[in-house]
Image 1 (cartoon, rainbow, N blue to C red):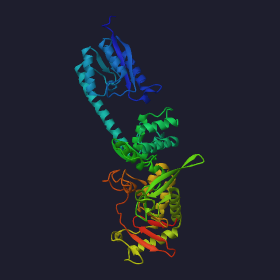
Image 2 (image 1 turned 90 degrees about the horizontal axis):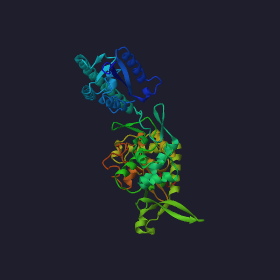
Image 3 (image 1 turned 60 degrees about the vertical axis):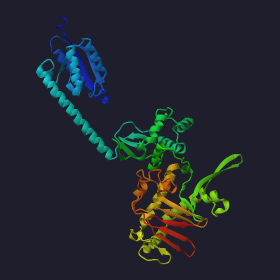
Image 4 (image 1 turned 180 degrees about the horizontal axis):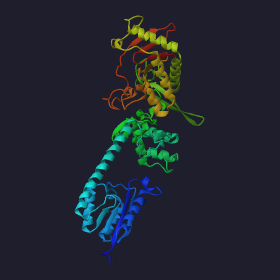
Length: 497
């Protein structure tokens, strides 16, 4: 027989996913078997070559086997292309018309064995166009359904897959914190807030011999991605929208927002947050100045030891004798305040007496030193359970965090502290909804405002606390000469040193 009598047939197979391609008897093999049986039923047809694209989409023509097939067609090696279905060759009408132009130019026919048409007849070409249009419609319909499903999963806080963020591992299609990696993520964020340079983070990780998931040194690109990944706050970014996720956060939203601001503008370093729990919150009662965080270094036995203080800024401006308060040990005052807050949270009788006085004062005129403000008389009464819950939640959350995140959390609960050697007056935020203290949607921390950085997270944004910031002030003196001051919407409580 001559070459004109024998048709050289090219078999083309394709599946879209790697999972299908890795099966022992894959769909590609099944397609090839059926096409071979069809070729055997024809006279003077023989298989020239099998072209298989396993794990490639049909939405475009960027497929190695298809490109090899086109090269063989241009060299007149193929007379007929056979595929199981037309959508195995392509799902795009535009791409198919371009392929048909090439086939017509070199005298090659295309046959779909299951749809029973070939391009050598007018009826076959009409059916081809109809089938291809429906194939594209099916692909777009499936695509829309998949997008809708992924969107609903994101709205429910479910992770939709993709690159697994460093610090998490995948369990039952959900993100679960990897404790060892999570510590590295926290270290990266805290170091960035201190230094503001990715280069220094890179050097620190290299010095400590900290490796990534593949056992290699962290690249600067990976560090930058970690610093911008909102997944670490317990949220999900899908299609440009942010949704609350089901997974646990590795860092707080405040810490993440501080890092994002550092990306966009040159700001002062935040090393103060690492060492001072109450930085920016303490004010001197004697002179009214803010007590700023500071430290001194002392050498003892050939070793350097650092001591941390809260120092009245008045003495920095006017001299050491300008204020009798001067300074106080940071460690002592922080421990003292936390111990007393814990004591009050366990003393229900004390809290009940406090609430009785506060609620009673709201319904009376000035009496025995009690003077409610006009706006507070319209405010709801205090709740014993709420105040106890706020105190216990504050102490619990504080014990679960460390470093920068621990100090930022304190700013969420504490509004301010008025200090003197005799008394310490603490102002706490009050809200009936404890979620106001647990979640901050990238809004301004009150501590940042008190430190003179009102524009740090955007001065036009709302505070993360409820809008009813109504004031009530009550001054009473007990038999022991202890002065107490209370504040509606938040509590002020005084303790002796």
